[in-house]
Length: 212
Image (cartoon, rainbow, N blue to C red; front, side):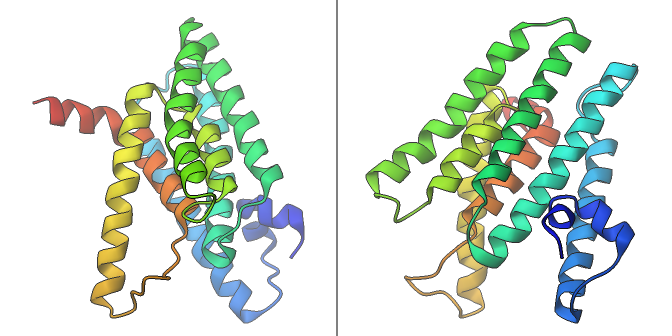
């Protein structure tokens, strides 16, 4: 499996040349996750897709999603995150915001993205500093700042809440399976990615429902 194939899961799926049976099974699950999430994003996309610019922005989001699925798969397997790929996600997220600002003629979206990045990143940064890297790693902090670009400060707060809920649920499931131990490790970056996806796609609905 080449580095390029791992970065672009949909390309690897088209090539369909896994190295081993185990790699094949993992790849298929990764591809199914990517396709399923892309379909959910399309069906529930919070903005109207009614122009070339809006479709370009959505297409870029799908590319970001592909990177995130690969990052999640890597995080689940190794509990690590390649720094250069986090920076790739950050650059693509920034491009997404710029396109959105042009499409909707709203430069303020760039300031909103900066606020979202700060809001989502500052909490894991503080946790990282207070725990001296024992609870979460530097990759989690970089990923949070990068993904926060896609969110407003309200959605960033929602993402933090969702991430906390997902962690509690994960601990509960592991405990029910009798596998929990105080030294249990969790793929925290995958939890961040899941929380951001839910907040970005369903955030307006969740906040609207909570407001009533």
